[in-house]
Amino acid sequence: GISMGAAGSDVALETADVALMADDLRHLPFAVGLSRSTRRVILQNVVVSLGVVALLVPATILGLGIGPAVAMHEGSTLLVVFNALRLLAYRDIAHAGDLAKPQVMTA
Image 1: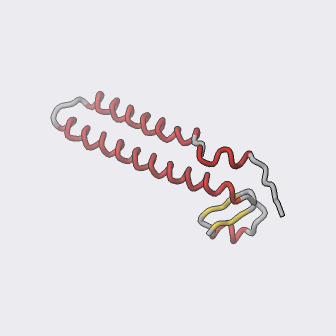
Image 2: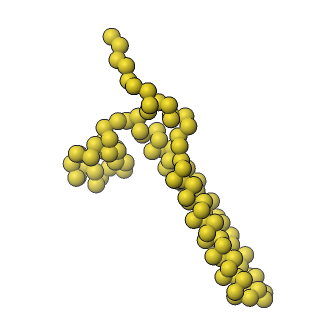
Image 3: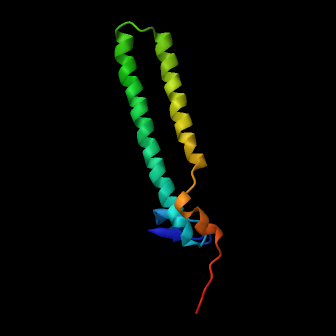
């Protein structure tokens, strides 16, 4: 479920799948979009991490020195970190203008 508001009960906040700190459901599409982007980035990072290890273990066994192998592994770690940092710049383009527009109620 979804819990709304920072003043909500502790039980509701603990049991909710999503906790929106503001009482505004217009932020929900942003949270869903960010979570989907996060899932894609996690998958990319796992593939890169496991791929590098899958290449480096046989290469080290076949004669690649431990120094270059460690340097390549650390380079892949930096790549994973920088890939994850892209999420800090996430903007939901489809709904970016919606939050800035005031809500007008008509009869």
